Amino acid sequence: MSIDKEMQDAINEQINAEIYSAYLYLSMSSWFEDQNLIGFSNWMRCQYLEESMHAMKLYNFVNERSGRVVLKPIAGPETDWDSFDGVFQHVAEHEAHVTKLINNLVSIARKLNDYASESFLMWYVDEQVEEEATADEILTRLRMIKGDNNALYTLDTELKARVPAPAVLPIILGQPVV
Ligand code: FEO
View 1 (cartoon, rainbow, N blue to C red):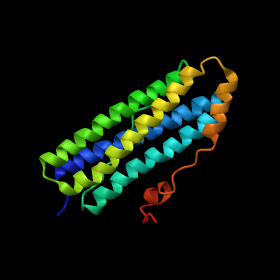
View 2: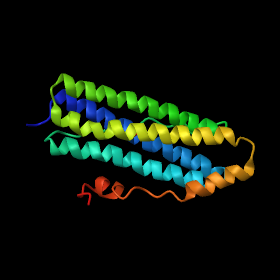
View 3: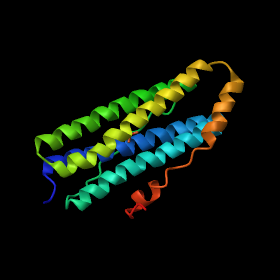
């Protein structure tokens, strides 16, 4: 059974929101690079890839359900922030917003008795718990170390070690995840 148009259109909106998230985190990566915080910049590049994967997982799902992906213009992201913790405050608020969007998609799936979409969207529900927790953790650490450059560079070194999850590239390419 192909996907209901209302569900398809709502998922297409979410594809846009996820690509916007990718664009926002790439903008933050560029900002951190300008601050010579290469670890933070790397963490944001990884986040950019994760968000691209979130978008493409939805994209693949619409196609699998014989729907039609329609891409829309992407809004320009913010490009400047006042402080390091200000960036992560923005991340935390943005992820809380995305969680609301995902919850709304689940509500639409339930209203339509679209169990396939509801089941698929549970991955995003779980993912948002992790996304919000990670943003809050880094925000808390930045608030604790405010003004302590040694602690800041220690955190930067830690964030430099982040690599994209193994599933990111296969999902972006529409290949099986092994
Ligand atoms: Fe795709 Fe960060 O939520």
